[in-house]
Structures are given as C-alpha cells and as structure tokens.
Length: 178
Image 1 (spheres, rainbow, N blue to C red):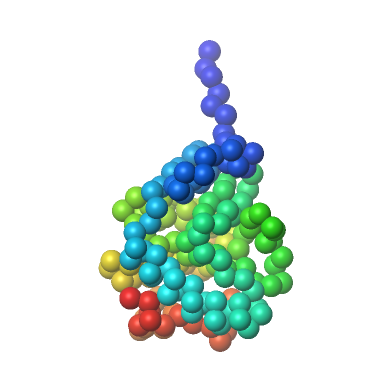
Image 2 (cartoon, rainbow, N blue to C red; image 1 turned 90 degrees about the horizontal axis):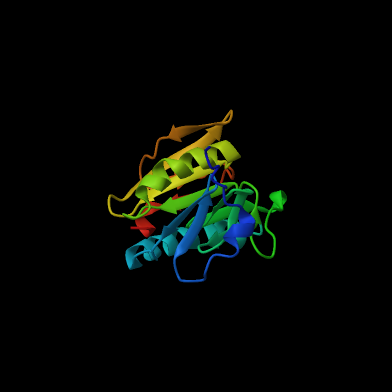
C-alpha cells in the first residue's frame, strides 16, 4: 500500500514562519532560500528604479520588489525578485499578486540558480508570465524570455539597453545596473 504525498497549497504557505528566509511552493513542494547578498540587492534596486520610473511613475502599472507573494496557482506561490503588473491586468490584491504578471525578474544567486533556470522557467511559461528575465549579476548577463504562443522564446540581448516587449517605449540601461 502506497501513501500519497499531499501537495502543499496557498493555505499551507500562509502558515510558514516569518523567519527571514524566502519560502516558495512550486508544484506543491516547499523550497526555502536564505536572504540574498548585498550585491544581489543592489542589482535588484537598480533594475527596479528604472522600471519604476518608466512604468509606475507614468501610471502604467506597478513594479514590486521582493518579498511579495505571487500566487500563480493554488500550489504555486513564488517570491520573484521583481514583479511588473500593467494597470489593465488588476491582479494585485492587498495581500499578494494573484495570477500571471506581465514581467518577472529573478536575479541569480548560488542558492537559487538551478530553480530560477529550470523549475521557475517552466512554471512561468506554463502559467502565462509574458516576459521573464534571468539576471546573472556576477557574469553581468540577462537571459530574456518572451512568451510566444504559450512557449518561451529567448530574445537576444545586444548592447547595453534591453527593451521590454509589453511597452514599446520602455527599456533598461544595463550601464546603470552593474
């Protein structure tokens, strides 16, 4: 007789301790990561500042930094480094983002690299996140994935400016990030 392992849900997630670690549920399984490094946080803030000034200050949407809960499904709750939700989408609630954001950014660290490149990439693609950037602060590279017909297509990052696909006049200047 086999015992079925119960998958965790959002109800389990809200009972996790507030211990300074980043808790996530992906596919019903619990993942926990230590706090990010100072350099990781510098890169995050610099990316957020550029997106915030071009999106949120222009009243086109919201740019939210971690920690924030993003509930993609009942058994998929993540805390991406940066979240962009356009105004028209209305998926931000007082306690979390519920649904697929327009843009998610994960900044790699040794403890998150594998999940960011595989598990989260597949999850974000499956749940309809429009654009996903995987930022490597140490190699100073950005992998830019854009959802086309339900699949991620890697878009080339050339030069020092990266446009976002969901707003024609918004880009990020990497000279101001590294």
